[in-house]
Image 1 (cartoon, one colour):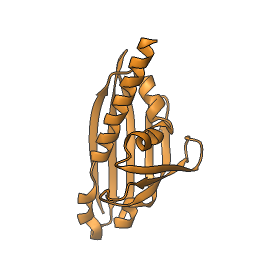
Image 2 (cartoon, rainbow, N blue to C red):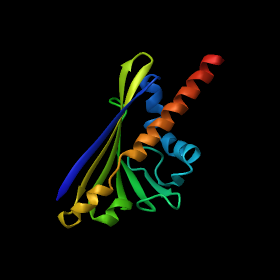
Image 3 (cartoon, rainbow, N blue to C red):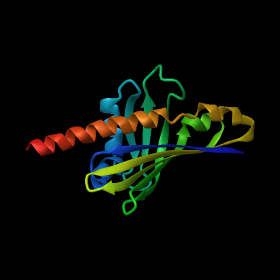
Length: 162
């Protein structure tokens, strides 16, 4: 069994509570469809209401390298520590011999008006498919958090103008 982890951190210029309102809910799924049509064709709610056990089906835009899509389940939502974890439960990397593909978003309070979003991918892949570990890239998550940062900044500016 081969395993690995990729991480990325980005500073956000909003309080941790505001960032968590986006990342800790279904909001981030809606945002990627609106703001990243080049990557995400649709994100469908299959089961749940955004809480633990929620299942989303992600469909990537045709032409995007990698799997056409997958279903993910919310396996951890910790409002106190602002940690949300999802795991692929159907399709996606599981087709390529992965036994675990987990994404974690953690919102870390930095100051009154700033926070850090830490994105982590953890994976395990069967030994005979170990070469497929090279398919794992954190770039899509990097793009998602950049889009989220811009969105949060726009909302903050709109609030300040009022």
